[in-house]
Image (tube, rainbow, N blue to C red; front, side, top):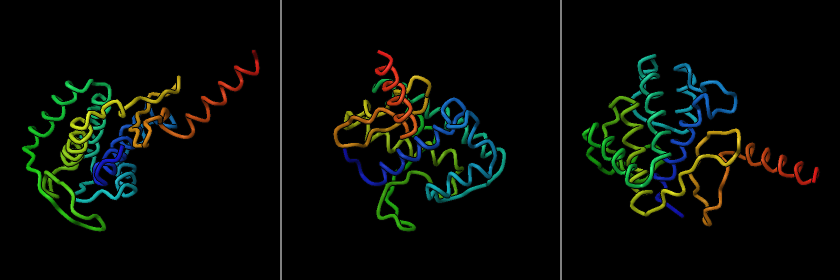
Length: 182
């Protein structure tokens, strides 16, 4: 499945943000426990707009991360309710913008809106595309037995099962060992 480039970029960011949660991170720690760690994630994903880089912003983004993780577990109709609520809460007004190296794409908040609000609204806009194309089954939890990471399957054939190569390799290794013992 191919979505618009801004939708794919946002979905990839949402997954990266959600997987910083202690229950899903590679380390078992909160990977955005400090404003500096949050800033590094935002820089890595070329996030633009206002950044306060303070504890309040960090707390609000962590709450947004938790909300987005919850949405991943919802069925399509429940996801619609959550997405509409995020857009309503922000009084989102979609408009086309072009900035940095990105061509025309949708924003629905001003660049000086709080970071957590911009993340929620951009995620909601991306999820609108997923929902209206009936592709919510591409929003999954990792198939690894010991992982709660989330993923979005952007592959053509929809066969992605693991949140990372690390999880896939680990599960393949375990399956190989089990076959060897038989």
